[in-house]
Image (tube, rainbow, N blue to C red; front, side, top):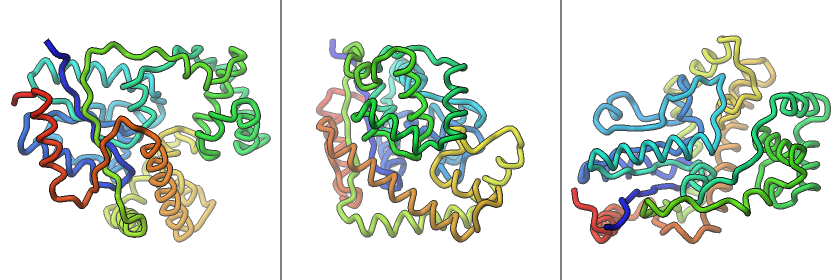
Length: 312
């Protein structure tokens, strides 16, 4: 008996992944598992393009609104939670569809995750103090020197991953790249069908991302960020607040920049995120690339699902 099937639908931000998944849900009994490091947080709705309550009532969604913004959520947490969700979907005789662009999460789930040293609150506090004194750019430069592979992959504006990579090195004397290279593959208990939506027209994609962010503002994104800011127990270094769009508007709420400049920076950051995602996806061979505008894309996925032996 073959292992049960799971479908992955990924791609850069704004490529239409969620819309494609909902089209599949019109033809197959599916449940959607979000692969989005920001949609896990309650209260981050508009800027994460989180599915509405009506959509979630129509098609079951998992790993959405499972953390408070004051909490942290890791790739290891996701791999554990996603596997549990997949098992539940399979038990109900339905097809799990993993939808999202947090590619680190997908890699941890599909390929397995390295048994990294446990977090050290004391060392993390020390690193945060160093960052406050020297700046995250200096810590990123240190990481580049110690672990060029990780430093090249981790963006200078990603303090959570910079901190974790340096923490692992200081705790173990081994780079995080070495630990990850030794990661054991997960059990062969899931058959993966993996597709990536890759826009061919980069200029059109950039315009669409700008328009998308403007529509989020019109829908009330600034008020959403302001409500988070006014809670008083959140700060700019939390992973939730460092999400693209949120960190730029947070700076505006803190009086550090004008709204016009915050919007400009958010649109730029969104385009940079999409570029990094595309670079990652083009280096992967497991995904079958599809053009988001291709009207035959859904039919192709349906044929692949049928060929796999999945029966609705």
